[in-house]
Length: 227
Picture 1 (cartoon, rainbow, N blue to C red):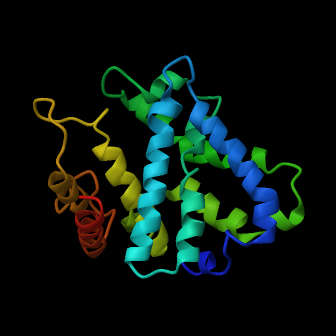
Picture 2: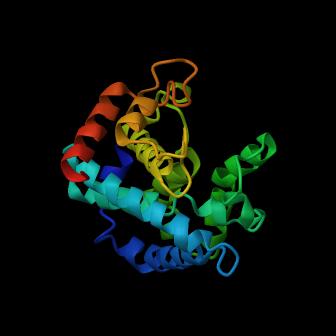
């Protein structure tokens, strides 16, 4: 994806602007309204999370020296990466549990990547072939939906773009103070989270997920631009 995402610019691409942007707006409306009048998971948790990681990814890519159009393409794709969490096969309550999920619930929740791909296909049904053949649709968005929890050690060829997507998603998800606590109920500090992402021990959750150099760069970015 590192090369593919450089080959177009969503901001001026006629095919994407004409056909994809209206679909993306429908997807975002679903995300924002998911769980309405039940637990409001979409409005209170999911949409804010996706908005934060989209903006963070965009700005981090610029910080790393990538062109603006690459950051814009990335922003569009990662902002709907959790589409699968809104799949009808999920009970909306699974995303806001009163205690830690059971092993069975963890397995169920991990299905959101595959279900996201299914939902993307349903949104693209009956759309023009020129959209279906666009690299943003064939490669970039599916990668963001399917691979945003993939450890680098399991896919060493995944490239920098998806490693960034996984890193930013993991950081924000762990630092969401509405759900992440430890010890006596205190929120994890940024320093603690970055050490968690470096994961030096094989027993650490994120061991093998990220290059230490990239974690260092992201920490420096946040210190400078997200103090």
